[in-house]
Every structure is written in structure tokens, then in C-alpha cells.
Image (cartoon, rainbow, N blue to C red; front, side):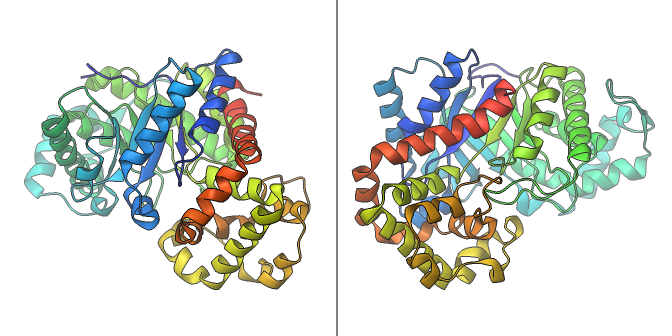
Length: 420
């Protein structure tokens, strides 16, 4: 089931809102290669982000290809149609070779009773005592339990199958990497639930190479993990065990790996991820998405002058329109409005004050995670500036690029993939 294009063991999702940092992001992957680990970049940008910014996937492709050519990158790289569905997939077909199949709206919708019954009959191994190697206690299930899990997830998997077959029809078999996202649900999946989901995916004959389950805790945009790290470690390891068992049992691609969505800046769980990968000898896909956009702001503020003024203006507009900007991201941000500085305060800040508040350095007392989250979802403000913002990036390319590369390599790639 895994013929065709294959995803490397280690990969990092690099969002590039304004398609200006591809070289800086790729430079971080080159540093990883120099350190002895291949981490391939996957440039990801969702339909929602394209709509907000007024961009097209072809622009992201052009930027990625240009960076690869300029820096002489000879290893694989991909372009992710992030969170697409049947309605939005068309615009991504020509440019992308990685597709995150978004089935969030179908999770929890009951599947047809006949489909559930067929699934349960097809998989008697899921009813009774289910022993998954590397998980200490066997799980005891019954027919009602498997039916319940199927009722919650089977319709979503079937929808993923519809999207996948449309992609095959339009692009051809083996010409893209499929990912299925199951992270946008109410509760984390248990290992046996993940196994049931993977059995359903195999039934749909989707050769997924990554899957994004939901984990315990909060994965808020651009800030650290909030939750029980020990519990996360156990869930992560148990999910890896379930995936290994599913690959062997259901013939899924051997390189199938976990994908950690909203994975940027989750510093407190990076050691757990790295150690689990070593234990199971597997890879991971870490999505860092909007982190680059924040590093652009940090670079502009650090540059001073016009760059700092633009950074301050963006904060003032984001503050004024916070309700509008936060609404689409309500489930993945947690902002205390009383801890946001006023625009008048920020107007008087120096470069150091602005960057100290925004840069994710928890040892700095000036760091403000509320401001960081607001600016994370505030890229629409910069988009409205149009050429003014883009020209500021170009005028301050060196300092912006330095921040982008340093952040991606030092704070993300090193702890996750190098264990440093």
C-alpha cells in the first residue's frame, strides 16, 4: 500500500504565511543535515490562510522551489495542502504533493448502521482481548465498544477515503503523501481507538504516511504545551505502539508516523517525543505553522526604525480587532485580555521591549504569552498592509532571516530531532 512518493523519517512542517522565508527555513534543515540528521521541510499553508492573505498555492511552491535551487538542497521536500476537503482541494492539485485530509466536521457523525455492522464483522480481532505489543496491559473490548468507536470515527474515515480517491483521480496513484488528521475532536483517542481508526483507514485503502491524533493537554498556537507531560509521554508511546501493530496487522505503509499538529513551541514535551522516537526507532512529523510569522515580527522589531513602527502598528490593529481575529482560533488559543499591554504602552517600547515580550523565551520576565498568541492570529493585519509589509521584510531580510533560522533550528529541530 506504500508504492510511490515516500515521506522521510523526520519532517518538519514550516508555515510561511507570506512566502518570504523559504530560504531561512531551509537553512535550518541544512544545519540539521550538517549535524548528521536529515529533517525534510514540508511547506504547509491552509486554504483559510490563503483566503485571508489573498495568496495562491502556486506562490508557496515557487518560493519553496526557489529556495531549494538557491541553497542547493538535494534531499526531499514537500508542499502540504493543509486541512483540505472536497470543496477546497481543487486549487491545491497542481502545486502540492502532500495533502492533510481534513475530516474534523465528520468526526462524531454516525456512520450508516450497515457500514458499522460490516466493519465489526470484518474485524473480529478488535473484539475481546486486544494485546498490542509494547503496551503493558491488554485491552478488553466488546462488540458494543467497537461499534461505538466506529460510530464516532467511521464516517470521518470514509470522508477521508472520498478525498483520497479524488486526489488519485486528479493526480495519479503514488504522486502525493496523504495525512489524516484526527486531532480536532473532544477527547484523546486511546491506543485501541487509534487501532480501530487505522483499521478503518486500511479498509478505505488510504496509504497514509502520517496520522495526527488528539493528545491530552492544550496545544495552543505558538506557546508551550499545557498539561501533564508524563501523561503525554505515555499516550505518545502507546500511540507509537498502536501504529506499529496496525502497520503489521493491516498492511499500512511501513513509514507511517505520528504527526504533532500545532507542534511549534511545545518545548516541555520535546524531550518526551525525542526519547519515544529513539525507543521505537520511528520518525515524527512536527508542524510548526505560524512560528515563522512571529519571527518576522521579531526581526522587524529588532531592526528598529520603520520595521519597529510596523510591528507596533500591527499590534495596535490586532488589539483593536482581537475578537474578530481570535474567533476562528478560539479552540487553540487562551488569551487573558487583562494581561495584554495597551497599544499606547507598546507605542513607547524600544526594540528590546517588543522582542522580549514576543520572543518565546520563558526565562525572560518580559515574555508575554498573551501578546504572543494575539499576534500569532493577527497575520491578517499584516496581509492588509500588502506591499508595505512585504517591502519591510525585504528591506530587513538579513535580521528577519536570522531569527527565522535560529528559531526553527535551535528551539525546534535540535530538541526534537537531535535531542539537544
